Length: 78
Image (tube, rainbow, N blue to C red; front, side):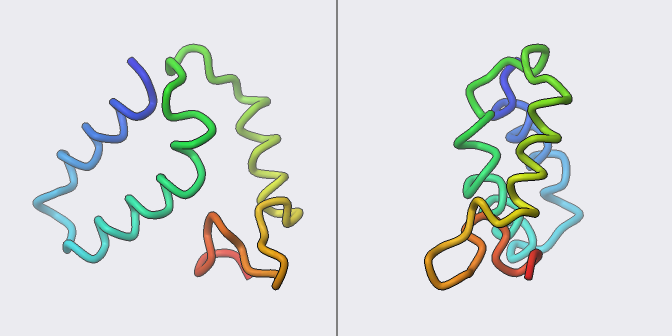
């Protein structure tokens, strides 16, 4: 199973318990970052080290625009 497939199952699972705006936000965050980098990878091929590296890149500002805004999690990381 690929990460994108798992994400779709996750959305189906939380669909009845979350508001549409929350689901839209979750989709946006996923599609802005994780989906591009890991979405088509099989779950068993995604290594912990890769995730930690990606997390570090986010925290160090690698995914920022020229004006300093975060492109992946604009409202979560300041």
